[in-house]
Amino acid sequence: MIAVVHLLVVLVLCKLFRLDRTEAFAALLFGVLIDLDHVFALVDFVKVQGMSGALDYQAAMASDLEWKSLLHSPVAAIVIGPVSVGFRMAIPALAWGLHLVLDWVQIEYLGVLSGVEMLLLVGLLGALLYLEKSDLDCNGRKHSYIAAAASLAHQGGDELVRLFRPIRAIPRPRDTRS
Image 1 (cartoon, one colour):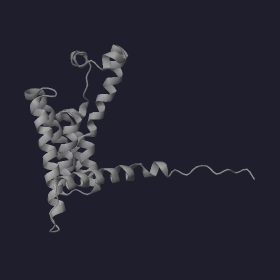
Image 2 (tube, helix red, strand yellow):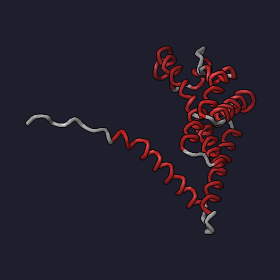
Image 3 (cartoon, helix red, strand yellow):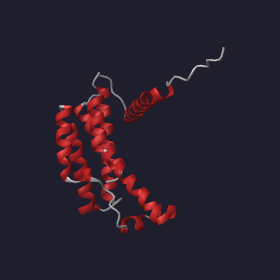
Image 4 (tube, helix red, strand yellow):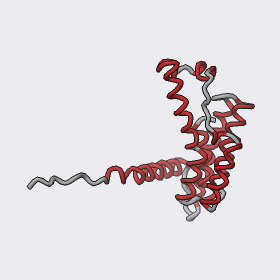
């Protein structure tokens, strides 16, 4: 599946199970970020095909490169199991399992960027909006789906700001000249 679908699945999982930040981090790490291994293969692909080849989808699919790492196979349970035990939660295993299932369904049945995959993407967006609207409505006031979308965007923006705040807060060396 495309990365956006993996991300939406994890976000729906976070909303559905009301995961805290640590659990959400584990879900994102094993449900989405394991796809960063494709970047390593892309570097090798660009060395062979050149930059123009990197934009050619057919050339990428016909390539003999291994695009996926060990984390994309059931053998990775040897790593994921102890990590789940270490986190003392099943979230890493669940997110990783969902990732593998989504990739398997895409490869075996749907194809890359198929219509069904796009319907799944739209359905996941709808589920995420519905869950956010339900959370907003729990205080007794009714909210629109537009308000739910704004709330999700605001939450995402706040998390990005919180994530990058430590980078901006790096102390600068003082001028020691007197």
